[in-house]
Length: 159
Image 1 (cartoon, rainbow, N blue to C red):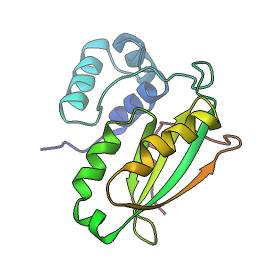
Image 2: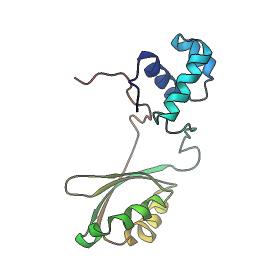
Image 3: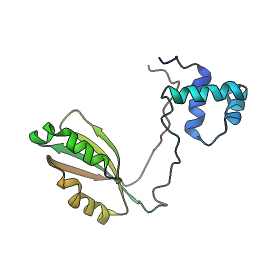
């Protein structure tokens, strides 16, 4: 059973999305709670699955992954019948950061990182295009990044 999020919960979630290395006492000060109730709220948010995990976000360019590619993948009719094989294979590729199932003319959208275009070409021909059931792949190279965030808009009302 999930308890509805109140303003303290929302503010806690906003703060840890910005910097998950903050201590519970620092978060408590920022949201206007004492340390113990804030810590209990953090534990509850973790236990209830609001907080999936806490990670460090890396600068992909500084670790040598200078190219970001979006690939649209269309499966053949027989490929769609073996959807689990494709999805399992995609999960095994560390180059694929995100994979979404789509409605429309293509079946999947992938976000892929590579050292450079040559590295992506190798990944494309040696791994991605060899997956069973793949009929068509359309790749688009991102030239620049205008906005990239992992922060969800907590507390924003839908209009």
